[in-house]
Image (cartoon, helix red, strand yellow):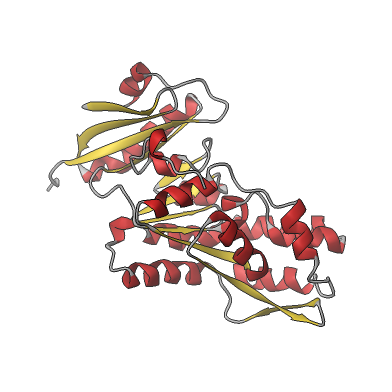
Length: 299
């Protein structure tokens, strides 16, 4: 038996280098009963009624149509779209780098480690042994290298600080939950305005990295557990949570969130996630919650 129709919203966001969106195009792509600009030519809502069992097929069709125009689209129930908890990955999501690869640069083995990182993020290698293997190769590096990388190499993803600042200004809690390292995550979380950060701890001795990751390992299970723990602590329904990430170790976290977004993600992650952003920046996650550009708070 078919379920009753639900009111959905499809939020279209133009990619950074794409032509402006038009109302005519959005209405042609979607069965819109109502249309609303969130930012002229950049982001728009199309609201329509549909049956839940038809949503996967409709979402795929909308993603294909938007992709051809250089845009992204996030489709979700209209009710509850404004989120109260943000849980975000760090490397290649909130920042543009993989910090372990940057450390490897100073060890003279970037290419070797980057290949392992890429395979792990694609889901071709188990995360924990791949992490231990890479960290072991970094033994002997001075901890002071971290300061250099933070100052000279780490760049924030466009929209990252605004995403955190706007959500927090509207009562949301923000947590950076990383499979990377606290040496980076604590500083990056503070700079971006997160409420807290969770990541792996590198053992250090006499100012140098020993090549050992201290337990427990922050991987896929830890990320999902963090989301669920924070949701329960804040007494929120699942629908009030937003998670974003790009790698295979983010999949469980994305699946557990009310809205799980694969951001410029590896193919396996993008294919599995209910929502994906391939072309726009992180401000797309604010548009998806119904924020207008005028509502954005600069971080």
